[in-house]
Image 1: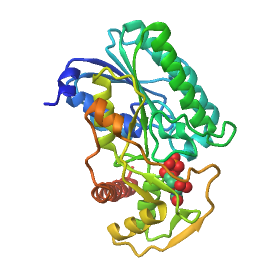
Image 2: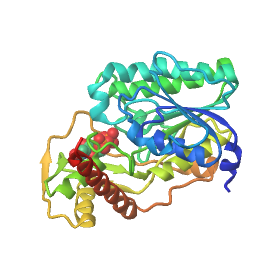
Image 3: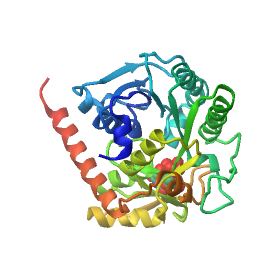
Image 4: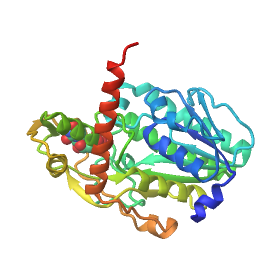
Length: 330
Ligand code: UDP
C-alpha cells in the first residue's frame, strides 16, 4: 500500500464534482484506500453513469446539490476535494454563468466547509490559468496571459479567482490548502459528446467519419492519462504542499499528429477535415513538472499510445452497451 493510501484509510472526504470525469476516478481511488466519500454534484455536466459502479461500496454517499448554492455538511470532514466545474470548452461556453458561479461561490462554500472542520482543502485548478502562454513549458511561477473578456474567460478567470480565494483562506483563516493545476486529462468516463479532442477524435475514427482538426492542427497539447492525474492529486491531498503544482504529462503533441495517431491506433479509414480554430484557442501547452516531481515525488507513467488504445476500447464498449440498451424492449 502506498503512503497516500494509508493516510486516507478511514478519512471522511467530501468530493465536489464527484460525478464528473476526474471526480469519479478520485472518488473510486478514495474508496479503494478505505476512505468514506460524500459526493456533492448537481449533475449539470456530471452524470450518475460515471459513479453507478460505486453505489454498492460501503462508505459511499451522493448528494445532488449545487455547490454554488450550498454544500450539505456530513460532519467530521477530514478532506475536501473541490472538483466541481464544467471543464470542456463546449460545456463552459454553453454554461458561462453557472461556470462563474461554481468557480466563485462554489469555491467559497467548499473552503467554508473545510475551515469549519479544520480539514485539508484541495482545489483542482487548470493549465488554463496560463492562457495563451508566452513561456514554454509552463512553470508554476509564470503568471499567465489570459484574455479577461474572451469566450474562455469564464473558465480561465473563474479558476484564477478560485486560486486567489483559496490562497486568501489559507492566509486569513489558516485553512490547510493544496492547489493543483491540471493539464489536459483523458481516459475512460469522459463524456463522449463533450467536444474535447480525445473523445471527439476517437468517436469519429470509430465511426469512420472525418476527424475534425481545428485550424491547421499545429497547436499542441500534452495529454495525461486520468489515473496518473488522480495519483498526483491524491498525493497532493495527503501531503502538506500548498502549491500550486502542475499535474499533467509533459509529452507534447500537435493536434494534427494526434489525429493521425488515433486513426492509426484504431485502424480507421477516416480522413482529416480541417475546421475553424475556436476563439482564443491556446497555441501551445506543456507542463513543467519539476515542482510535482520534487513536492509529490510524482510523474505520469502511462504512454499516450497505450492510454489512447485503452480509451478507444472503452468508447467502443460503451457505445455497444448503449446500443444494446436502446434495442431492449421496454
Ligand atoms: N480540437 C480539435 N478538434 C476537435 C476538438 C478539439 O482540433 O474536434 C482542438 C482544440 O481546438 C484545441 C485542442 O484540440 O486546440 C484541445 O481541445 P480541447 O477542447 O480538448 O481542450 P482545451 O485544451 O482547448 O481546453
